[in-house]
Length: 397
Image (tube, rainbow, N blue to C red; front, side):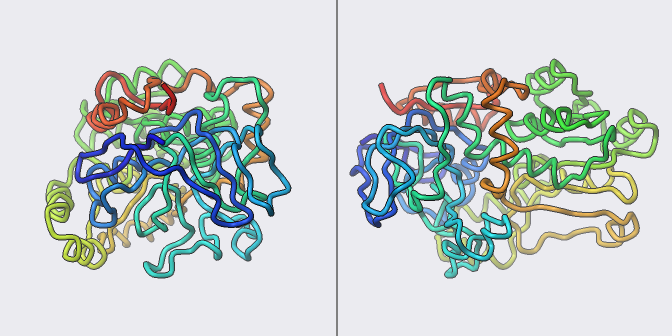
């Protein structure tokens, strides 16, 4: 089969690799019909090579059709259409029972002290072959894949793998009061969807902050009050956002940027230095003294009103990040964060994508690209070119 594989920093290729096979009686093999390119994939493209091996298959946002089922699978049959969540969860352990599927005890990666395994995402999270490929082996076939109806286009359902539950959880964790205000930092795919979900759930004022003009225009067209971070210095931006919200600041701020934040040249330099070191030294540096660019998080702390909530959906990976604890404590800020627990939110989300399209998922993708052009799409997305917000791959010619 054809699959998108990692070979080094900014070096991904479409290779011919062996087809996946049934390894456990509850496995299923799906023929992938669409697979998304995620902002988290850029961390592998740019920063986390120390935890990858050449030939690792990337991607964690697939939808497809069941081709084969193991002998123990009773819930699915060949021909069923399914979406595959990005976190690999068993559905039967203590953590899954709590709705914390990203902490699944069956698939936790104990070697690295991490939570549930993820498709297509480094040794830290299980090194499980990903979904930017023509076929994918999916474990826990009686629980993990999400059945969806045949008929509507893949764009209606594919975001159930990651974008929708990640954004829904970010808004849920933000605890925006009815009619309240929320500022979203970063208007990439997750941030953009956060603005839509926040408005759908009753936020009275949704603010979007970014530096990419195409993304700002896209959000503004959906009724978001937008601010271009490049037009202000930090203090000015805080003031104009507060002024737009009655002078107090938003009730909640969602940081949908994470380690991709602009600014903080020293932290950026340390990240890039780690990518140039031998893997053993790079992993020690990342795990012991790694520091993220924190400009987005610092801005969130300044913006949120006293007693408000900051919800982190952007991924952070630093182990020695400095935080302004005095300010966090003094402002009585609540912080919530973590990988999305996909299955936890399926019942909330399915009605929104089966019965109508209030979140605009069918028009959400900016680019539909053959898998054969995935390397160019990665570069375009990483450089924020051509208005790229969401890229979907078609694995079949």
